[in-house]
Amino acid sequence: MSLIPVTILTGFLGSGKTTLLKRILTEAHGQKIAVIENEFGEENIDNEILVNDTQENIIQMNNGCICCSIREDLRETLQLLAAKKRKGLLDFDRVVIETTGLADPGPVAQTFFMDEEIAEQYLLDSILTLVDAKHATTQLNDRQEARRQVGFADQIFISKTDLVAKDEVDALMHRLKHMNPRAPQKAVHFGEVAIADVFDLRGFNLNAKLDIDPDFLKEDDHAGHDHAAHDHEHGEHCDHPSHAAEHGHHHAHDDDVKSFVFRSDKPFSPAKLEDFLGAIVNIYGPRMLRYKGVLNMEGTERKVIFQGVHQLMGSDLGPAWADGEKKTSKMVFIGIDLPKDIFMQGLEQCLV
Image (cartoon, rainbow, N blue to C red):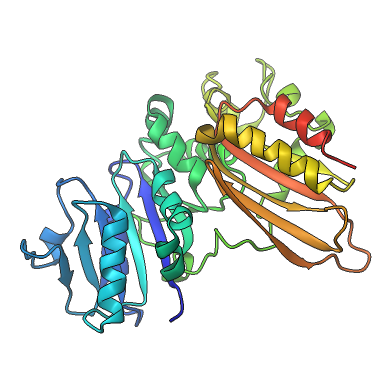
């Protein structure tokens, strides 16, 4: 049986998750979707669009989709769904997990790596984060959960952009890009998103494509790997468009969720790198939200792809370096108050 793809949907309260879910559940896309709601007994979308049977937490819908609300462990719910699918009692093609507006998606994502039985049945496709343009600035300033949701994202959808001025939207996008340069951003109307933008994004694939916005990389080039030197020193003469919009408050650079990129044209020593990554994950793992890299390793002609969530990381051999392709290692780290200099110096010392 092929693996069942899973999408995690996250976003702060009021960001449009329910609208997006309704769309996913009611659109005629020909896919049968199981939705797992991780709302702790709060208002469920079930009440509005489903007949809720309280005896069984799984509800079959008229278009073949099914919904269930988690009262116990996510793992048990996934096991139950997979078992019912195997026995032919339920028919679905994929799973969408909606986390609560206050949830950290990290532990949800980790379930798919840590638990062998789950890993044998499901494939984590991506984490989608909805951001409400009207309230994002306050939420990101005040709530770490909102910042973490951005840090984990493979794709960011910004809702309610029609309710705020364009320069505010630009400032928000600039800020989100600093927090998570590997997640593409898309403004959406009331959480209405084309299905093609939601499924099969392969954000967790160990593929050779390291999606970091090329302009983000350019930005810290001239600062010798250190964009602190250039980016966090915007003074009163700064005329960057998105800073003008911040009324002199450079919140974009006060976030505890930040990203940085390491690059080198020298190959890594596999043993040194393994030791170093093992050590930093041991110490900083809980604060490392997402990290991913395409690496040039001594001793192989193929790219080595690695990525992780918190303390869990995996690596894989990717395709061979193409003829004439520059063998550059690139790694992006997204985390909470990570000591960039320790990471950069440590990685530098792992090079051959």
